[in-house]
Image 1 (cartoon, rainbow, N blue to C red):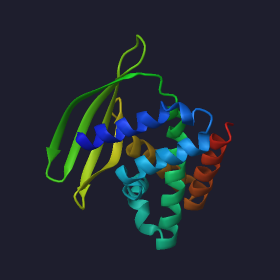
Image 2: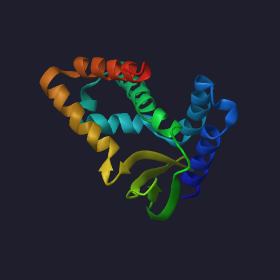
Image 3: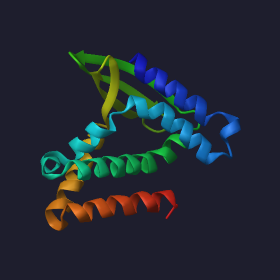
Image 4: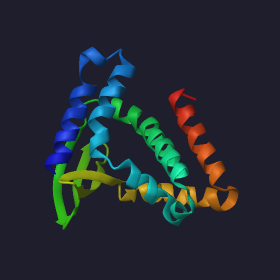
Length: 174
């Protein structure tokens, strides 16, 4: 829980820092510097492909990890930056050996709180997030279902092209 709390604290310090208000690219670079060491994007990418991962060459795997990481950044950076003082509650943590889960809740306005649970694994003495469940829906599992459908229908090359196109359209605001 300490690792998640500290990362969230650093992220919120950046998004609420007035000096970054109009410096979007500098703010995003600073956010990447804080978030990247806490997330295992390689493991997330591998899990999102499921059994299809085994069919890829090392070069394809590296390219997919880059594309998947860029997609996650594009998809979630805007959500992180839209923080407007929502209350984040750290509910509890569970640990089973080198795996742990940190349960949080985000309350915004008068609506129902959103549960955000971080699934972590310990690697080289550091806790890294390998999945996030939002309202009990696994981010990695959700991508795996979508990616599996595309690969089965259109092939891996089409999936990779679609991921890159989606990332670019999010970045350009379309």
